[in-house]
Length: 436
Image 1 (tube, rainbow, N blue to C red):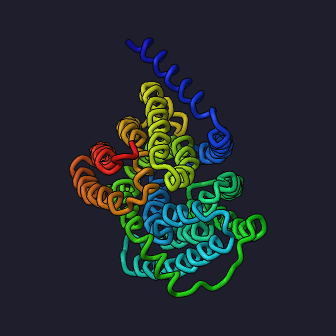
Image 2 (image 1 turned 135 degrees about the vertical axis):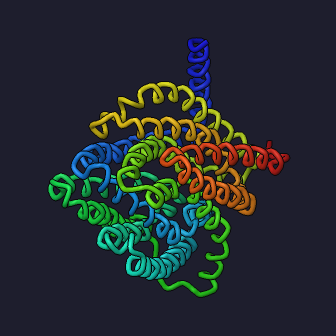
Image 3 (image 1 turned 90 degrees about the vertical axis):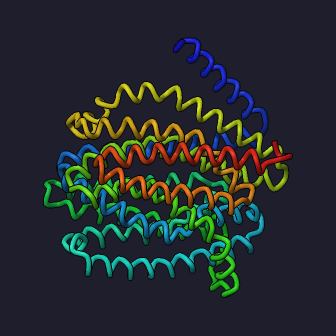
């Protein structure tokens, strides 16, 4: 049965590529995607180099601490993003030929981000000064927090909306290059672990500062102080997606965080190896595809709802079939992959990695349907689904981590992704109506 299925999968993928190359718009999209994927691939070669090195030099315990700090600080990244990667992205996409409107959106978003950055730092200050677990390693958390500032400066949403994703890949590649070279220079023994978050943050800050100059020089965006009514309006527009993003984080970012809180640094490190690998797989091919398609999907929906729905289905079917073909290979290769990146075939990491691979199947099978909800302006529906999933996810993650340790978050993620897939498919069928 495997051989005919493989032939069928290849035939479907081949037919898909023929269909999407039939127009100038689609050809541009394919070129944009492959350009972004190539650069993203280079972008992830750097972590693949530093990842095994850091696991070996720092050991599971200190590596676990560094990854735990990243997962904790990521909540502040989510706060400063405020869902703008979807709402502001959509606004820029619709108005990309109107530089005055684009400038207004850009300045309004950045003023809000600056205010949220200040609030984030005040919250961090309270955590690291009054909670013993954080106070003991305060430098690790402060250095990691600089990533929040770099991320706030870097306008991913702007480049996506303008459909110029090559800037995202190139500048992220720059950030990773700075980090990678620095790691081998400054991190030579386990005592140097505190340098890891500092060097990582400096890479993000460099990319953020460079991006500000590019936005002004290459796109002609003017900088000015936005009106209060624009700030309030942008906050209201992003609120539902922001809540959804926080909810999604409850069953994604919280995985490492829950293990770090309920176990120890060594177990956290062993789980983090698997979690990091699944993130690399996701970011190497699914995220570039979603980033390339979402602004185009929003733009098409504004003109033709039927075409937008068909467009979404083509890419959803393609990505799902492609991952189903890859899944058995990745599942069987799991022990070898873990050994290559960590120097040891840790059984804990192998088990977690395999469960996460299954969870990622349901993530892939739903990626473009979820984006369609936002492209169609159904933010309320998107928000309800992910808030429900977030509540379920955070309860399951902490409960299962407490009961069965590092395996818990991976199983919780699988259950939640199946739930989100079911709810999203049902929502798209119920809401799309004439668009189908």
